[in-house]
Image 1: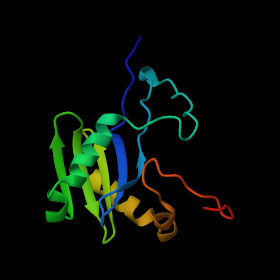
Image 2 (image 1 turned 30 degrees about the horizontal axis):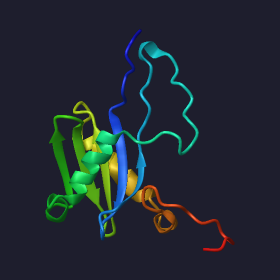
Image 3 (image 1 turned 120 degrees about the horizontal axis):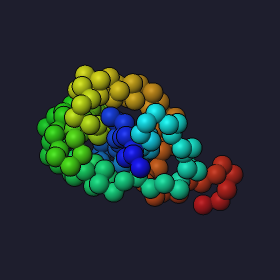
Image 4 (image 1 turned 90 degrees about the vertical axis):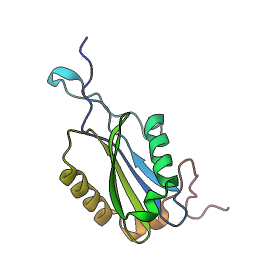
Length: 138
């Protein structure tokens, strides 16, 4: 059986800069080798993000480097490159294969920053947080 092929972008996360708390994340599924179509995605909320990526993002968020640099690439032997860029209110992170050019990673981060609109920012809750439906009581 052929091994799955992992996409160059392995993990994406967004965190609030004020408290460095992650509020959104995405991890693409591996693609089957041999050009077969990928399996359908699992239902939302049923596939937890890979623990190693969460651990790496948590370490970066706790690092002094976030305060020292608004934009940085970190090479990690376990996951590849960790690229981050920040807006005045949020930190955007991409974990990617070392084969992905840095320029491409920062273009992706710029698009993510642009598309992370104010209404989405306001409605984002921390990982594991519950959301209330409109009209429901607290």
